[in-house]
Length: 300
Ligand code: LIP
Picture 1 (cartoon, helix red, strand yellow):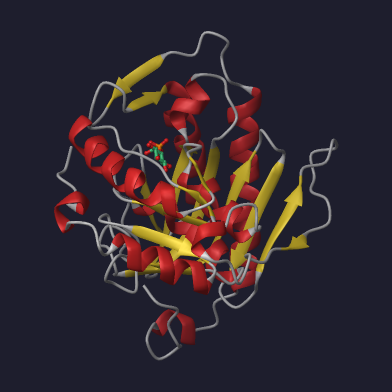
Picture 2: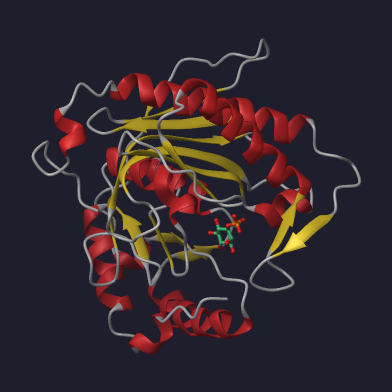
């Protein structure tokens, strides 16, 4: 998943209006985030679980994804849709909207900050690691009343929600660079299966003495946006899905981040590593020294 030239992705050689697609991603993410934030029931409960009893889904995850799917059917009926909570909708344009209605569901369940709505449009198949390329995307953080937006070649920006339901002026985002490993504020996250958490605990224990500090917030989309904004120096995590990262990877890259896997040039379920070029290379080198068995993701 490296930034393609037009000859790599035919879609990019066509008259794709990437600014318009990023405006749409932004508007849909903000609209959905406002619904999730303002309509959160006081008695919100767990509507179901997925890979483990702690991997929860709420009625709002499902409601917000259905809202996004309905809006996409209105405005982009021929594009495919790949979302966290419902089945893949095929399309005919080669474009797929990749949506995470609430990234950071546990934080949302507990009524805490640290969750977001992620909306991206990609070329290729987001169900296959390495087979998709984000073209435009947005991550809305209603707890901070902010939205992050990017499209390929257009840079990354952040805007604040305004009281009248609009958005304030956008500011350009840039990663921190250069940052040496020992001074790096590094974000990470953990999976929902005890076996995977035990693996991830070994990795974070080995990395912690080598960096400034570690933060674990709970939303991959926001972790990537904070790297883009220079509010963290790097982020790594294993076990992520395309809907967690599609918009955030583009926002981070457009702000100057390098985002790769452990060995691959594109993130995989085995690993995503993001940061300014110097610290990303240093963290990647450290992670590659761990036993590879720690990065094997057994489907939950
Ligand atoms: C979350 C990810 C986060 C990870 C959490 C969880 P979800 O996604 O965005 O990076 O550490 O465990 O998987 O499940 O809230 O959509």
